[in-house]
Image (cartoon, rainbow, N blue to C red):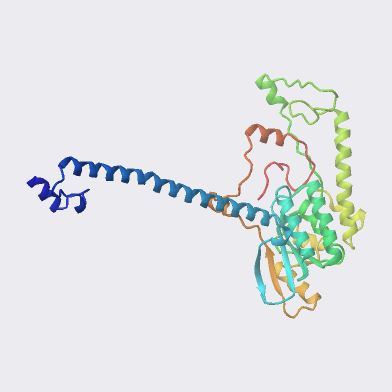
Amino acid sequence: MKSADSSAAGGSPGRNSDATLQPGQSAELVKDTFVIRIEAAAAARPNRLNRWLAALMIASLLMNFVLVAQRQLANSPESLPEKRISGDARASDRIAVINFTGTISPPFTERWLRQIKQAAKDTTVRGVVLAIDSPGGLVADSHQLYTELQKLAEVKPIHVAMKRLAASGGYYIAMGIGQKGRIYAEPTTWTGSIGVIIPRYNATELAKNLGVKVEPLMTGSLKDTLNPFRDMTEPEREVWNAILKDSFDRFVSVISENRSQLDEEAVRKLATGQIYTSRQALENHMVDEIGYVEDATKALASELSLTRHEVFEYRDTPGLIDLFLGAETRPATSVADQLLDAAVPRAMYYCSWNPWVPVR
């Protein structure tokens, strides 16, 4: 009893002063009291854990809601993020700069289309400058952008500012500004490369050395056209020459219709696939002036008689999940999917013999 009293008086860990032995109480009763309190404390721990788990679940749900809402806003043309470049941020008149950087192909095509449509809708945007730094890309995507730029040019003036490279499809989309717009090229710009390419590789010798035979089961003689493990037949060449001619003739007509100083004959002389320097392009009436984005925006503001205006650019801002992951989220594709996709024939306005390596 003495030791029990002294340890109780000393406040041993895990004991409460209320649990000391009182007159008429037995040691067994005190022991039972400790057991009950220990069991109650143990029962309280899962409750606290459950509360923490519930809080984390609610926070996760809120985060998912924010991410979904942010994705929906990012896909809305009315909510494209902007960045001021110069001028008066309080001005009611603005000039938008749309940056066409990289290969003209999905998903970039969709982003640029949204920006073009937003510039057309925005009543504060008085004019647009296309800042092009692209080697070109897919024929279909280039023409899609060209068509949408034509619609924009009907309601608002557009100038082009070529940067490092504005070749093939990059030059094609520049024609969307029409005859009223002006094209500026930097002193070191490369442009031109007017033409079409469909990539094809001939691996027949490699297949022979490896002892590989490719014998696809097909319903027609042209079904496996562009097969890299055999030589191309003359009927196949005729088919693909017709496809190339169609895309090439369209390219030529797009230039001759939108460059007043170039008729079809002049364009065909230039359309050898050659890349031209900015000085050569100026001499051949492919561009109008040597200058930069700033020169294009100043000239456009002067034409619009804007005394106070803001110059801004559209931007593609990553979402919260992208900031956590360090990159944009994209659907995962297997190696087999990538190989199948690379084997699909594509006509391209591209200034390279190897369009399978996109520039971005």
